[in-house]
Length: 436
Image (cartoon, rainbow, N blue to C red; front, side, top):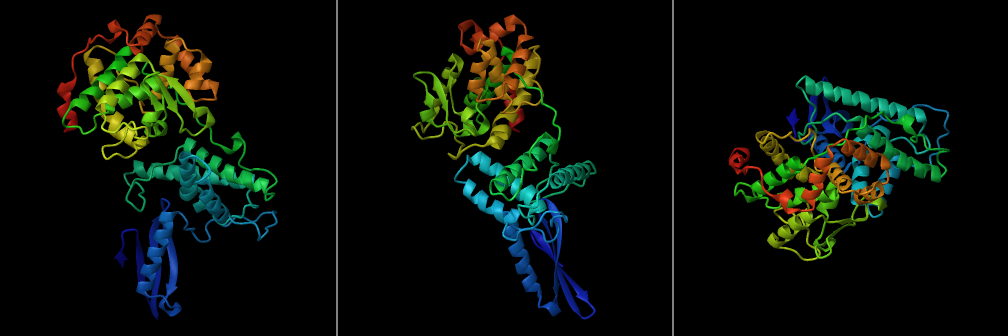
């Protein structure tokens, strides 16, 4: 038995020959596939070639497990002219790459290749029922629990690259059902289905709303910006635009992919405006006025940049590439959090709330807008939201704060001299420890 990087060829002796089978990981699941015997014409070399072919299909997301996902018998009349889910979604996904935003396309690709195709590939588009959607949801819940249990027992599952397979959250399971529903809606349009069985809240898991995470004091915002500046100045760290990135997340509220796509033509320093034009929804296309503090930070950042042409990225990586949400979370923000907490605690201030991520800094931006007297409609417009519930939660939260603190917050982002006066010791002494 020889083990390959992506799987194993099982070569077993029989009484009158040899049998061949494959064991490998596909879409996070352990797979076993019987090939046949030498009497069927199989050889070791052919089995190795078949394994290579299957793993190539797995990497492209087009491999379909045999027999597992054939639909249950139903009263639905099967029309052989109706394509299978695998056939239809493969064609539609290729077309959607040119029709939708990159973020939407990547979400569809993730949901289809890792979750929906391994379960529904052989189903014809006319065979989907409400029961099928509920069975899929129950399967994903059980699968998540199995993965969670494996991690707790110290035997986590890993994919074909050796990466930990994490349990899918209820929110993520619902995302896959929504993606499925978008393709079934087309099946309804084509008269393959009478109605969309994936529609409605009953097909989704209940998800508890996560409370907004706010940095709603001047001390917390200042601490995060100060340690970002310290790391930018340290020779141990290669990134020198961390403070400008954090300031933009805090004071303009872009989503991670929006910030990553910002070009210098989108930054109007003369008129103090930022144009967000590469978002996932029409509501995301917006213009954001710059506060005085953000204007100062971006002006300084531009003066230090080597590439400031209209089509150059505002926040490129060290190699000139585009950042993504993982880069922002792990390389930019994560190193700051412990340092900021140390600075706050040493100054007698409340540490940062738990769960600070680049996306959660949008909540802080909403708080700042409220503190500066913006009305709910303006807050929604600057965040690129269409749902007022989030805005109302932010209002409710911030209105509980001390009016004096709201006034300090407004003065700080407006760069009033007394609000910007340094009142905390430098934090650079701890940078060597963190870099090590």
